[in-house]
Length: 206
Image (cartoon, rainbow, N blue to C red; front, side, top):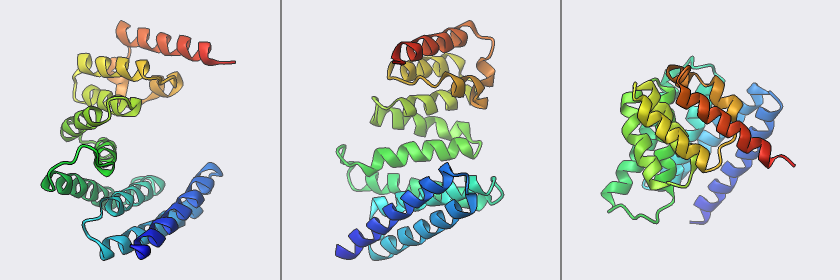
């Protein structure tokens, strides 16, 4: 257990380096930190293959490397999806403890990875499960809305976006430019949501 705790501490240290490097626009440094974090996650899995957070961290490290490399190595994303999927499968096989923290995080990350992979049909079920597991997290509803919009389910997408806004999302600039929602452009309901977000954001400014 002490070894696992040490590995997790190393991973967190690498995460601090990743965040700093990304904020500074230093992709090479960030990539090096993500690769180091990947190695730490693999060490944790070698010590305990059933450890959910080890696979969660591995999937996250692989996914971020894929993004930094400009989607040039699709195998990274496929392996990230496999790790997230395994966490979810292991959780179900163990009886599905609703208080377990790694499972909802794995669902949210799997939803995001499947959308990144351009597979909204497969993502839809996972994104819905993530929103059900953490109904108070606006990001889960945003991702669900994205899956619905990409799958051609406009009404469901707008419903999920409405929930996202109610829960506090105020990033109107990001939503208005997100390509996930191009199918909603020109829909009066989408325009109304953007106005609602903008008004809410203006009320929050000091």
